[in-house]
Length: 246
Image (cartoon, rainbow, N blue to C red; front, top):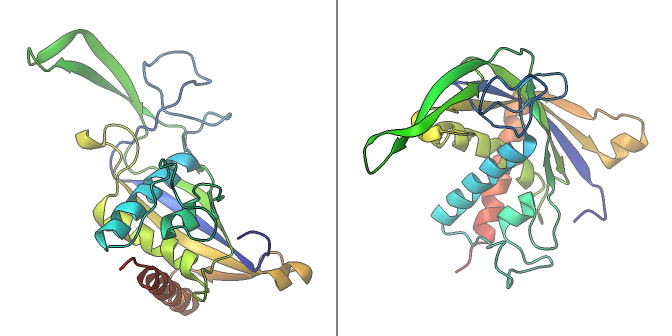
């Protein structure tokens, strides 16, 4: 899959919190003032790790494709297929002996503001607060914006030249309309977010050779962006339909 560079798409995305958000970390550069801090970068700004977002997106893709009747690999099954005969999800996010062709960078906010939410663990048998069950939860407040980047290596699958790009663009639309939650305590209303691709650059191998390292830029809302998105989503649908198991 990666022996030949055909093109590369670099997407700039934003995440807006529609409720308080908690993505926890094991450590913080601040004094231990809270039981469960949010994860931050070395400068003290809250982040959403790329691995967290990628995991959510993979799960949503698997659920969606199974609902459509498409074949989806079980990456924990030792009999899982290798080589080129892998499912659409593994083609995107990696699988057994197959590296991921999508790299999701951490998204970072430009403000350090967080809130402390008091919480308590409930004893389910007694139906009251558990002894010693009080704990604090640090959250990023509603209305915070994060920004990050996603890189897609070789946007095509078989004859569908923009299928991977279409998968990511349509997946964000699906996520926003159906799941739209990430992080801890989503069942309690935390972690409602909206993810949007603001623009992407499509860079061909010949662009690098000629010194055009940014390639062609497609800004959200422009006719060029909408046309290529429509083409890419159609390619993704075509690939999935062509590779369904009978």
